[in-house]
Length: 125
Image 1 (cartoon, rainbow, N blue to C red):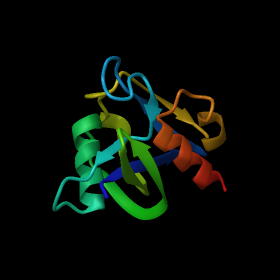
Image 2: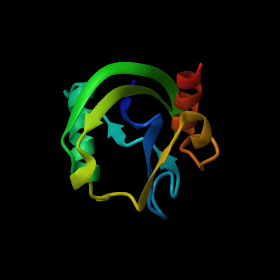
Image 3: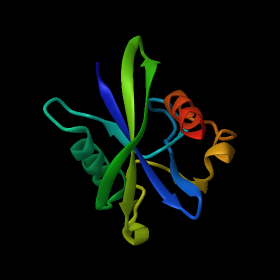
Image 4: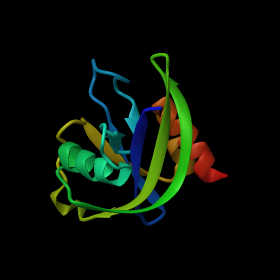
């Protein structure tokens, strides 16, 4: 089963969300930063790589906070969310159009990627 990762980067009770660009996969949805695990890659390594590629940041990947499964294009994926810390002073939006900080409950009002909506509901429980 393919695996995707999500970074739970917190600040004062809120979490970092990024906005996907128009025209691509899950066009203009909000999501936790992260991405797919490549073959032979460990999930924490993949998340660290994705954060460097998407946001230009070095991150410390902590404990697994939650996981969920989701369907996308006829395939079932597992989504692993890790508590993550990073110095965001150098953050650059390299693959996204915007970012915001939201509590988990207020993030549900965003146009979220379905996988992240499921994950947030699991985190709130």
